[in-house]
Amino acid sequence: DTGVSQDPRHKITKRGQNVTFRCDPISEHNRLYWYRQTLGQGPEFLTYFQNEAQLEKSRLLSDRFSAERPKGSFSTLEIQRTEQGDSAMYLCASSLNGDRGLYGYTFGSGTRLTVV
Amino acid sequence: QQQVKQSPQSLIVQKGGISIINCAYENTAFDYFPWYQQFPGKGPALLIAIRPDVSEKKEGRFTISFNKSAKQFSLHIMDSQPGDSATYFCASSNSGYSTLTFGKGTMLLVSP
Image (cartoon, rainbow over all chains, first blue to last red; front, side, top):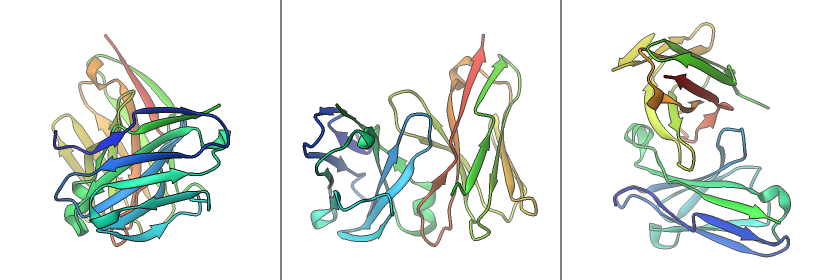
């Protein structure tokens, strides 16, 4: 499978617990993005990496959220002390740089988080 | 602060009809306008995209019309098929930054 892979597909957690999601991008893509999508809404940008460097973070990314991309390959998104408002689909996407990147922006199938 | 406004929220079209979804943007720095298609349980998939140097782009049954002065663009799906039933999102980007700002989506149902 040469697409963007996300794990797990579903996660149910109790409020206050920490959760971690993983994203494996398309191998030749050097940019990796995290978006959040709530029911009935479009995806909202959270953060993105170029190689291992985290270049931009949205105001949506509170201090309970942290993302890493060690060695510029896979990425993890961790949410600490989860709240019910964190329930959403977390989408990962990858692309190349520049114009080639915009036209090759590929999303994974997402991780659906439910906080109970 | 919603920078991309999409309408309608939902749309029902008969098989063979034309589906039209509209978007309006606010940020004049945006210069890349894609449409994404999303099926339940899947991530969005790029359908078609346009730059503001052209007013229309067609790929198969899908056409984007772009009006720079009005800051509006629309997706037309010709000869709509039941397999087109999905949620469609418009998005915009300042290509220098590459992050996408999405509309709220339109749920399209094509009846057989």
